[in-house]
Length: 428
Image (cartoon, rainbow, N blue to C red; front, side, top):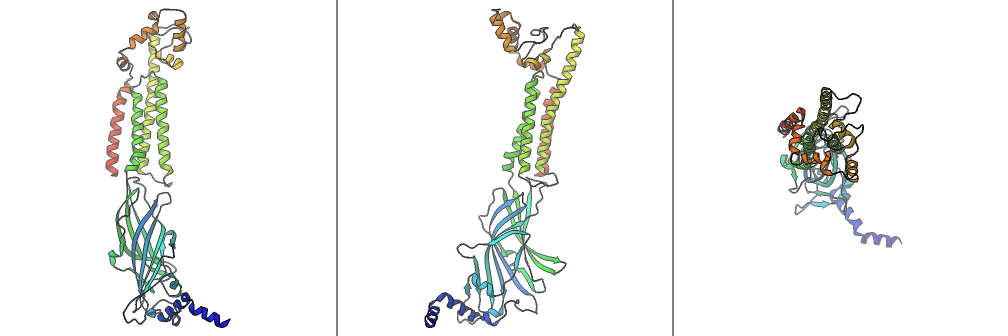
């Protein structure tokens, strides 16, 4: 049994190769728990990054997700080996656990992982002189401190920060391997809501009170938001609601149900638009640019309702004064057109179609009763009123305008146009 087990070990190539590699790199002869050059000057570690994609940008969570190739370059003379042809040796992730590698981590990261399909996406390349290339493919989600004061006309500046976790600047010097050219991106990177303006690499120092100064590298990128989506979803509907509220200025001031229902509908629609925009945004404590536009648009819609309340009130006072001048009998209910409209919802001419009955019958019942009693329709006041309205609708509307409606048709659109010019000129 012992001889058979020895023979099986010799035939198992997967177990023989790692032993040969470890012997060639002298892994067993050194303590790789210590960094190269321990006790001397800090070891320089070069970094090279290729951004494969920016997967998502979340305004609610204020973070971004990026997939990248992270490459480390350093020299460890303990891994040097003899090679007649001066060729490097390439390994997968199984050798990483047996040698020293830099402990680079992502500052402000929330989630990150190394891709492992079909195997771990890790590559280690060792050169005869001890130079090492360590490359891995990572997806990381990190925080981006966003300013939404100009949303959705904003530009966001985000950065992914790299730093050694254990080794400060006295033990490890982290730097960009090729300067500004150390950061490269895929030409086809695109986002649905953002336009990527630029990528840049920078470096700096970070201080921790308990451990000292650390080298830190920055991957900076600027994102400019596409405005067209928000124009269709927020700005354009808000404009239409404001314009729709102006329609009430052209409706007869005695048409109470029409003007009130139109005003309430536009107010509720504006509230729905504002709620939809707020639901997709973080709950920040400052005012955003879209809030300014929607709230002012809501104010215009609300003022159109208040405008009709003022018109209706002043009209009622004016008609009461006219009734007092006419000296109507105090013991009878003499209803004017406004009061009759409130009861039956039908238009009435004050001079032709008003009776002195306490409660006038609905317009449909009046017409039915007139036909049942075989009274000639040509002699009824209602038919006279209908004939008088033919071809004179425009004249009647103009004659029944209140002075507030007349001014509102000019002031409301003019002020709203000035506001739009000021708004878009300020934020664009």
